[in-house]
Structure formats: C-alpha cells, structure tokens
Image (tube, rainbow, N blue to C red; front, side, top):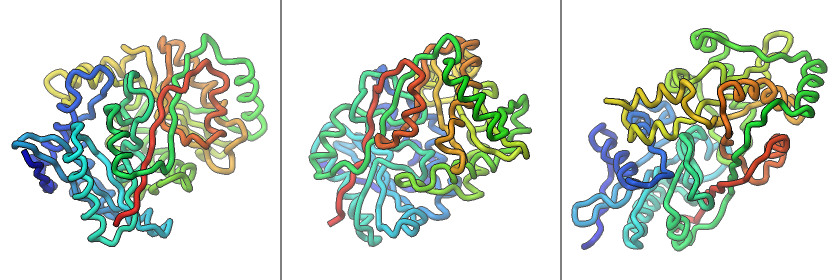
Length: 377
C-alpha cells in the first residue's frame, strides 16, 4: 500500500502518461476543461519549449499499488530569480488524489529537488511563464473552467495548507454580461481618448499580416505592460516565435482589437476568443478523431461565451482610458456573434486599475485563485 514516487523523463511516452493522468483524474467532472494533450506535452518537453533556455524542471508521478495517483512538476526560472534576486522553486502541473501520504511524498520530492539546487522557497502553482496556467482555485468550483486557467478539486487548498503553505497572492476573475450596446460613458471616453492621443483601432483580415506587422510587437507589448507583476517572466525572442506559431491559428480576427498611434506604433491590444471550454470537453484533450471538429465549431461562433485572454496597454498610456477604446471596439462584435457572457482572465486582487474597467458591465466576481509559498527546509 506504500506510495512510490517516480521521476518522469522528458520523452513523449512518459510525458503523455503524465498529462493524461490529469485528464483522467477529472473524468465525469462537468466543470473541468482538459488541455490539448499535445500542447501540454510540448510545454514540458525541453526540446520544444524555449523556456528551457533559462529554466530547468523535473516532473514526478506518484503511484499506489501500481496505479497513478498524483503528479507534480518542479521548475526553476533562473531569469525571474536573477531579476528579483530570489531563489524560488516553482511547482505546477499538480494533481493528486485526496490522500495525505500521496500529497506529502509528491511535494517532498519536489522540495528535495529544489533544495539540491540551492532554492530557498517554493511557490505555486505556477508554470514556466505567465502564459502557462497558474493559481490554485480556492473559490468558484461550480463554474465551468476556461482554457487558460486551472481547475482543481475543492480539497486541493486544504491539502496545500496542511503542508504549511501560506498565501503569497490571490487572483480574481469576473463573469461579465455582454450589454445590448456600447455603454454611453464608455463610448464617450473612447472617443475622447482617441481624439486626444491620435489613436485608432485597426482590424485584420489575414493572420499572416498580423504576424508580419505586429507579431513580435504584440508580445513585446506584453513584456512591457506586465513587467513588474508578481512572478512575471519576460518572453525571449525564441519564446515569442514559439507562442506565435502555437496560438495564432486559434485567433478569430474579429475578436481581436489592436490600437495604434498616428505613426502606426502599437499602443494596446485586446486578445479575446470564443470560449473553447465545451469543445475541449467533448474532445477530451485530443484533436482526433473529432476534437478538431468541436474546436472549429466553437471558433465559428457556436458558443455564448467569449474569453478575455489578455489586455495589454503600453505603460505610458495606462490609466488614460485606452481600455475603453478596446471594449467599445469589441462589444459590437460580441453582440453580433450573440455572446451573452465574457470571462475575464486572472487579475491580481490588488490591481484596482484593471478591475475598474469592468464597472461598465453587470458582473459577478465568481472565481478566486491563490499562489502559495513555503520556505524550503
């Protein structure tokens, strides 16, 4: 009956077992949204994920009576540690049955790995970058998850806190009702900002043109806008190329808003997309035989929800109302496509400026996520 912990080698067969355990673990749960198996394998593969240029990682799986019962990945992001003068080991991609011995041994293995490499604290759940899933769900277990976020069982926080981990930060999320027209005050602010700073929204009909004109600029803008946020890891040129290739195909161009100045320099971007949650559930993490079909239907508009993946505004334009331009531009599209709800992504609970932009919408704050920390001993 003893628990066995096995390190996972970065080869496709073992990584596939690691990823598929997470999906099987939630079988029958109506709120869990599985990842695409191939995407998670690529994220954990040092040969494919350019984050390994400045990160190292080790995944572990727990087995009981020969059956998989848990998993965890320990990560050291040297770029972030050097920038912040920290010695943090991140942990993420964690799943486990509600068994104290399993949880203890999984985290002991990760902690020992970090200690051997001179780390002083362990924080998580976090990934290699902020574009990986992060933040343990502590409120909102009875809401359908989203593609870019973690879903976990409600016993997870209790187990993590039993280990002596404490809150580092919380993120919150909102569900917004799509209004039947652009709110008057929002439109007024959008027009004022546009005229004052000579800004305009531009639209694309070609993904190739986006990549050529603004592909790298979009991600460099994310680097600028998010720098200084908790745990942020700046994206390198190789990572930007990787994410462009990985995510550009999923964009629906009319769900994208780009703001430029009079010289066509990028000022702001709102990346949103039809919710893929139900499609991913139907595909069970696979593209074949029918996973691709469900995804294409969702991208074609067969959903009543839109996911607000990220909003990034150039620092010198932040808090000047540019966000109003983005949503005044997007709301008519949402109405045309018959979206009823918009799901925000993670926002630090202390980021009042970000949360203020939702004051124009009927909304509920329905989910809360937590990053935990603990000293390595």
